Image 1 (cartoon, helix red, strand yellow):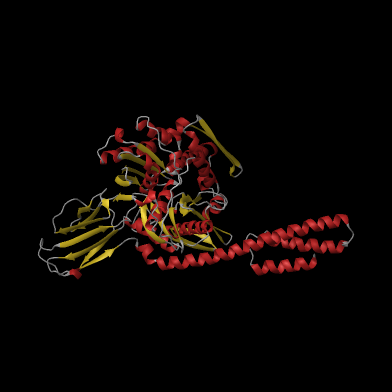
Image 2 (cartoon, rainbow, N blue to C red):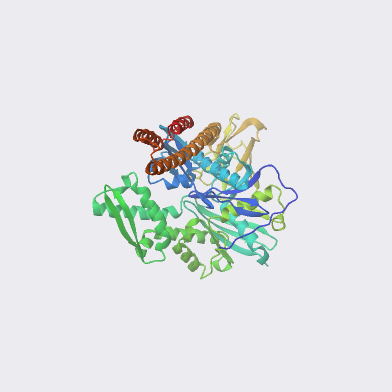
Length: 591
């Protein structure tokens, strides 16, 4: 695999703390940091460059990442994943009201968790992994989001970073972060302006972007098109539903209501989708899937394509929309860059290659790491690093969604158009008489008009929209007719749920941190006790077989003590440090 190395030398070395770039993903998350004058993706204790965005509560403990994902089949109801798809969503979103709060059992109690809380736990884990890897405290971070995240989702992501103990330097779009990584890699090979199409297909989000990169290193995002609920999991779900229906027909049993079978089947679907589009057929086998009945079913490549034809069609339609918005044809695209784990599906790659008339797809940069790579480069630049390849980096991003103001009668007027460069600032004066309906738009906030009623058509409001580099909107307004600047009160909605509960989330994060530290101590003592017990049993067995130094009664006493110690070790809940110490002292006296 091609390895990018970006030299980041500077005279402004920050001695206190470290800065990282984070790809907070729906399915997996990843982080990078400046290390030895180059950007390096951070690996965890298992030497994995990504961690599952997964949290589990089991036996009084909280597990994050691999530990959570590995026990999902045994503990599906208390394992939480895909929390990012709900981040920043409001309670008045009728489509999500039933699932905005996630319920899990922890320490014997039913607890409700918001998607922001779960996401902050994933960030805390990434921060801990980074600090262990770097050997220093991490303070600052750039965090990426899907390009089509709206204002409240971006603000919620920033809040999540704050709860995790991070100073969020900037929120950046995932395709834009990819463009940074690609632009730095290809900088020495760019002799003219080139058009790059970035195809970012993750587990639950999908963005396509059109980016221009010039030979000086200026990266200009031209168009962003996306869908926050379209991704590889749609393929998993289509396969899952198909297998559930087939099993029901064959065995008259609905395995989707089984506690453990669904998670095992979904895991198998996720694995097999990556090979099904390149082989004729495959079989999924799951032992004892339901009441002793084994699951064994075959699916052909033709059936796989049939189940997902709408998904594949929607992917190509998004590419066409992206090109159409910029009035560009496919022949003008110089490079097609793949991002996101779901681009590893051979069928997706073949569709893109066919659409772009046989053009080879750019795969040199690891699709699971490239977003974090670009975020790390930006984080380095924002904190003063000025290496030769980074010094001239100029980034021009765009607004993914139009920003408008609604007035009386349900009409609205666009102030900042979609795909306008950011930061962007626009001003408009409004009276009762604009057109275009606003009922289908995403509501961000409101002005509370406390100005005394005026004659119809005379009231004028001066509105200023300011979209910052994070893609987060700030706005203000004043009633001009009366000259009362205080007549208009701006109610910035953002995500009132996370704003109202931010202090509680911080308190909970601290509480869970203390619990995790206590559990780490318990695990350490538990393992030490287990090692000691194993050593004692081995020595007693050896001595008992070779000498007469112990009487039969003494051996029985020792065996009883060992059995009691074994019972403590086999407890489902980890006991406290004092309990282990007490048993250890007694065992030492007897043996």
